[in-house]
Image 1 (tube, rainbow, N blue to C red):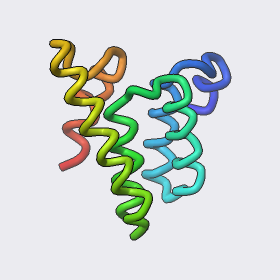
Image 2: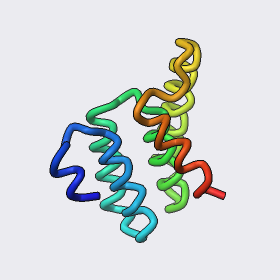
Image 3: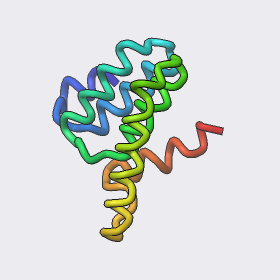
Length: 102
């Protein structure tokens, strides 16, 4: 994952994948930084806001989780009203990750 970020540092999907890997490895601090990098390149990503909010919630940091949950809902509504659902390439990642969150 780190290699993908080095190759395409402006690809939010690479940052998202890295953050998800870091979260799975228990590297919360690094994951938060990677999620923030993903938002730097795609600030309208509902999925990244949701993942960040969930991580903050797991850490008991509700003061940080709640605003991120709100942003996730806000951007998801905007994308759905536009008839686009999740914006590409995030849609592919969302589908791939749907089965791993059960």
